[in-house]
Image 1 (cartoon, rainbow, N blue to C red):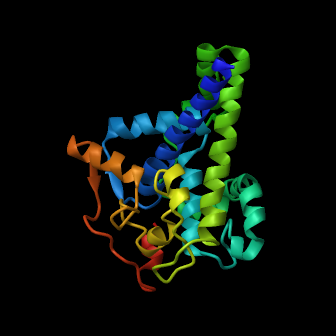
Image 2: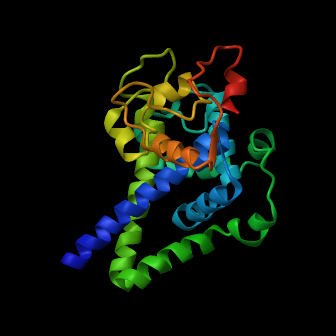
Length: 251
């Protein structure tokens, strides 16, 4: 019983590590260039993202940029307004994979992220990265509980990230005029991503929790890296988008 509880906790911790990599590396640094990470730091994030999610950054970036270009209108890869929030919540991984494999989407929205030698040699092999991550858990906990930890991580990561797209465009508060919503509990389990209305209001901001009390763990990580000279923030204060700047802000 004790080992199973430790395995479940380990799975949840790995999920949070993956969520921090998603919000800092894939989202704020990759999709919006809200923060620039120094080379070694970016590589560490890239490696951890690979072994915890298997995600190819250029695919994630392309899908997310298209979401900003067509938010909740025809062309949005995962709009709960068009598809219903339950379908996005439960089927987000399939919606993502379909758009991530669309070469037209990649060419249009990730042309600044062509595959490099590391992608060709290593990081484009998603199955290998996931295999490494699972093997580490198995080595720590043994086959049974290692796979339990991996399963807990997989389910919690997929569901929490789906919730940003599904719940984060359906339920919650809208202090700014966009279809995203602010959901406190969602922000707490996704590194700050639950402040989704704030994010759509100022996509190029490295800080998503704007107000006092809006906990934004991704921003804490960025701020910590910046204090050591390992990250550079694009804007000190959030820059709200207008219709004229919306397309540029999406990239």
